[in-house]
Length: 212
Image 1: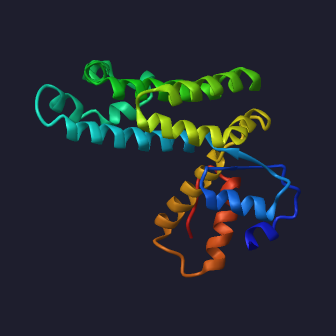
Image 2 (image 1 turned 180 degrees about the horizontal axis):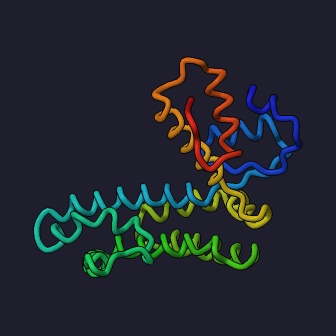
Image 3 (image 1 turned 120 degrees about the horizontal axis):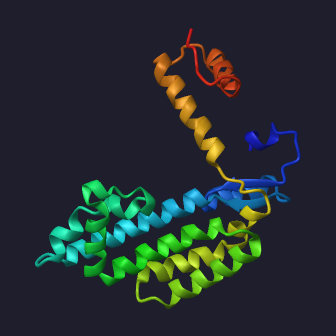
């Protein structure tokens, strides 16, 4: 790929999501580089599975108390527990929904345990936490967790590589992409592509963008 060919420096590690296309591209073009699977994308993928689980359970709860309680909690499930707003009774609403549905509660608390893996003090601790998480998920009665445990186990080395490369992630890249989108919106589209490229290259030099 041209993008890889234009890079002259030796690449030791590449942060990416677990998409097969990305993995194949890295292995084909820079086979000596270590793959580091981005933890934000892993949690995002889990949240997508959690949302689908909630929808499936919601469809099953067509009558009774479960329906009104489960229906409005999607964003509460995805929120970091520390960010739940007690003034809006978010924590209470979430607790009520989890008490009424064991599979949903199991998946939710497993998400928090998964997130905690990247907060371990060292790689060995993270390895133990990750292996324990896979065992618990595989042994659960929730099919979504069983399937996700296989995904995590298959990408184990790339997940743990996070600790070998000082917490490498795609965060900086995502930030740059967002800046480029903002730049493009501010300019309402550049007619001069080369000028647009210069503006993009200058993004890292300033905290703001002047369009002219």
